[in-house]
Image 1 (cartoon, one colour):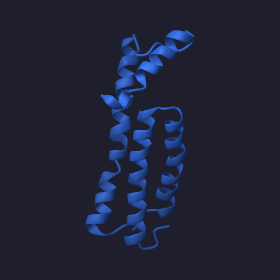
Image 2 (cartoon, one colour):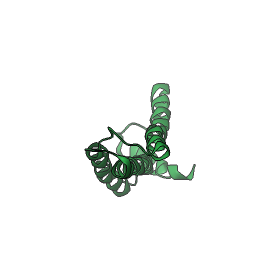
Image 3 (cartoon, helix red, strand yellow):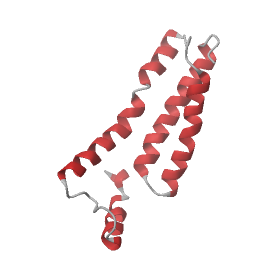
Amino acid sequence: MKWLWHLPFRKRASDEAGAMEPYPARQLRLIILDGIVLVVGILGPLSALPQVLKIFILQNATGVSVISWGLGALFDIPWILYGIAHKERPIVIAYTLWFFMNIAVTIGALMYGAGAF
């Protein structure tokens, strides 16, 4: 899993500082939580896929808010930049996926929505 390249850095930082939780986690509950967060970070954005497909297949975005989905895309940008700045690839991946889903729904709402605001 090449995209988890930050893990050795996180492990080194936790060993050197002593104040951080060790990484990878040693407690079962934290190992499970790490796995859950990783899965949710990828599957979460895919939850918008039915909305995207519905809009573009049926060519109908009635009731879809351009403002809500557009702001969602706008608010993803700081998270992407944060992930890049802190070299947290899981954050970059998750919020990039959310950004594209939000943009797709926004474009679809603009194309096919009747009063989509």
